[in-house]
Length: 151
Image (cartoon, rainbow, N blue to C red; front, top):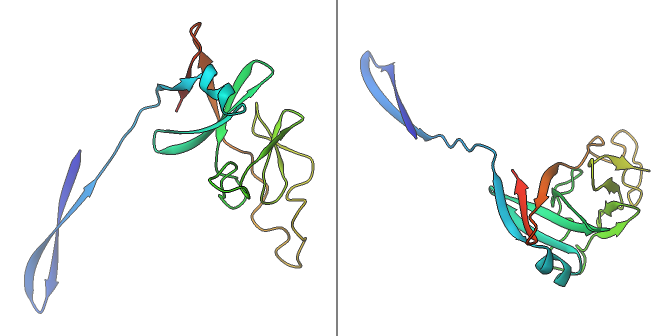
C-alpha cells in the first residue's frame, strides 16, 4: 500500500508543499513450495531456491531436509554460488563456508568450532564482523516428496 505525507517548509517567507511517497511492503510468513526431494537428490543433496526475496540453501542430510540462508553471516557471500569457488561442503551435520571455512550447524545455524579459520586474526579488527549464527528456516516435506519452507 502506498502512503503519502505532506510537509510544509518555509523558504524566503513563502510556504511550499512537498509530497513524499513511499511504498510499504508487508509480507507475512507463510509456507512456500520450493521443490521436491527428487529434485534435491538429483542436485547432489544441495539446492539454492529463492523464497520471499531471499536465497535459501536446501540440504538433504540423512533423509532430513534442512534450510538455511545461502548468505554467510560473516560477509554475506554465497555458500553455494554459480562458480566453483562458492561451493560449500557438508561435513559433520554442518555447512562449511567456502570463503572462510566456518562450520554452521544445519539444524540451529550455530557456529561450530573456530570462527573464520581461513582468515588471519588482524590487530584491532580481528577476523572482521563478530561471530553470528546462520539464519535457519522451518521445512516440511509432504508424503509425495514436495518440499515447503516457512519464510
